[in-house]
Image 1 (cartoon, rainbow, N blue to C red):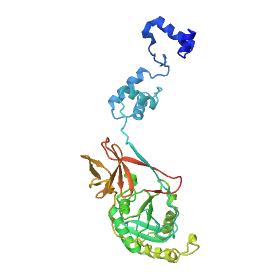
Image 2 (cartoon, rainbow, N blue to C red; image 1 turned 90 degrees about the vertical axis):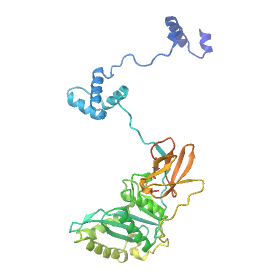
Image 3 (tube, rainbow, N blue to C red; image 1 turned 45 degrees about the horizontal axis):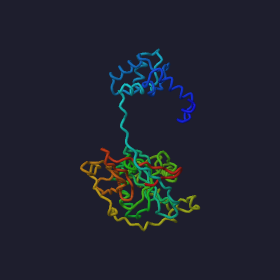
Image 4 (cartoon, rainbow, N blue to C red; image 1 turned 135 degrees about the vertical axis):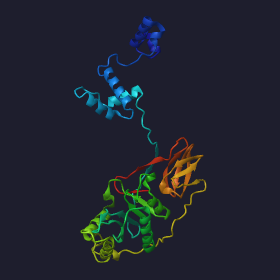
Length: 371
């Protein structure tokens, strides 16, 4: 036995174990045995299994949490199984279908923007919280400010935050002051959305003009802290109390903006006014610039509903890109990277039946992210 076990590189105890099993049951006794415990003192009682199954069949759309609450009402003095135990019981019974999750797409590392040194490199934009004038009309102030020299470019009273009215205000501003290199904004409407890489119709339009879009991190207003501080001054000096009507509020704001830009000293500018440092941008407003995709890439026009026709099926890309061309670049067999101008939107996979897979943005520890 010692020589036999040494030849098979097993211990003598193991050798004698298999010999004893063969003597007791023959060849069938040599099959692999279950390692499950013979006794399970904490196993769910059959009584609770039947109760859980009955509740689930009575309420097919209820999950473990709701079933636990229902069992608690029916058996207030009993020691109920945990919610996780109810979920495991439903899975064993085949009564819990896992929710279909959206498959993950590529990971994109967000770059930290370089320090701003000159006017018109970065404009910060936002909507000051809406309020009502004394006649009861709603006013939504759209504010735009140069990040380098703190020059207030726009503080316009709008009657909502819709795409068309906001776009019209920016077109007027771009024609007057030129275009910035980049626009920094938060993720709220109308600047951001829950679509591909957070782009909305407005921010997608900025990209078609050749403007870089920079989003701050979600839930981090300090990433745009200078603009938030400007809002506090704007609110204290123009909105408290509000004017009689929107026209008077607009006139008051125009006077205040001129005073802020050309008379009010700024500590970050060595007590000089922002108007002493600002000059208009040389980047003129030329309207939408058509994309120039490399030749090997395939292009598709996004329909009004946000879909493209791909391999005989409609695949959803995003309503923000309706009417524009997107490019598809092959990544590997059955996988295509979808680009809107220079921005990677998502991955489109031939095996999927829905739209794009979500891009995962990896943010830096501090500072805004770049799209």
